[in-house]
Length: 199
Ligand code: GRF
Image 1 (cartoon, rainbow, N blue to C red):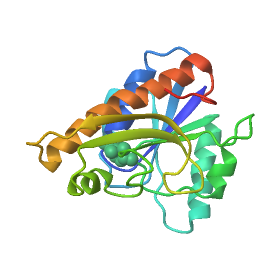
Image 2: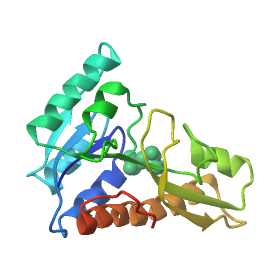
Image 3: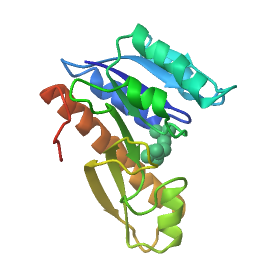
Image 4: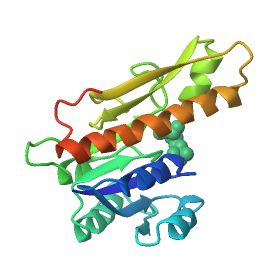
């Protein structure tokens, strides 16, 4: 199973997935798509996983053209599944249709830093922290045409400690993300699909 990762920023989740994939037998990650020239991920991938191609696909024109360009990279590597890891764009019909698997389901997965359906969209850790939530969480879910609305595959909580700064809270959340996202990758490796998977 060939998988592509999509990222925009630091790419810490993408790096965890690449590391995890190197221990798995049925999946391969030949391609990482990055849409932001400022992302620090491309040179980290080149250093640590030199066999993986990083395609920097910036968006100049329409979303449709941007997604067509991304799709041509995916086709070149026979990619069937995409894992979004901090990709700061809502996907449109070109990718949602282009990545439909045999079952007719779009094979795109995302990680979101909240206990969805709470705090979809941007800055979710900050929003939960500022709302004085007693716990935060992270969710891996299927991608559909909405913003962070697809069916949930795994969702885990972490506590907020009385002494937490926002930075501490985010750090604890990211540690949890780095644990649960590779678990989903492992489930795909072991079962060949994620249909019906609820971890
Ligand atoms: C993560 O918190 C992820 O849940 C969200 O964007 C952030 C990306 O962080 N979608 P990184 O680039 O993986 O470090």
